[in-house]
Length: 138
Image 1 (cartoon, helix red, strand yellow):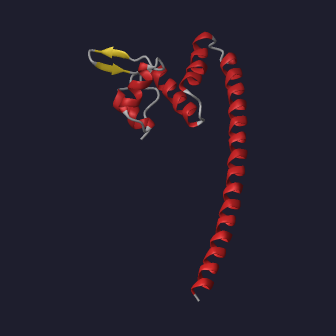
Image 2 (spheres, one colour):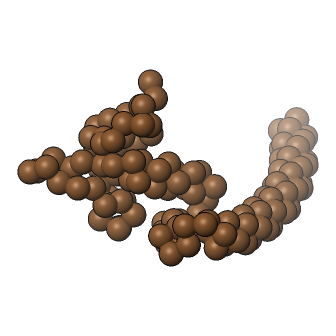
Image 3 (cartoon, one colour):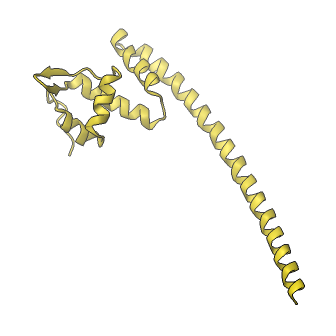
């Protein structure tokens, strides 16, 4: 069940449920300076800004960005509310991430091909050795 985003405050348990993460993860993001909840006694009170930032954190993690990269992109909004700087940086980061993934994809394809060759060679050797052993036993 999604939260009402017009809601003015959120508890840590509400955010954890909505985003499918633990309250420990939210506290970790807070410790890293990515979230800055207000306090009501011992209770953390997250505002709409924290809600949006958490959504951006989760998106960034899903795309494979480090927390430092996510912080850099999120913090740009505070410097440039027009989001122009943030969008330029985001596009640059997306292009770099795409290239990293393509490189990994090529490495994986090469590794899979090598595994296939080694498996085939090993199977041939096994068949040859089993045939020799069967011949010697006869």
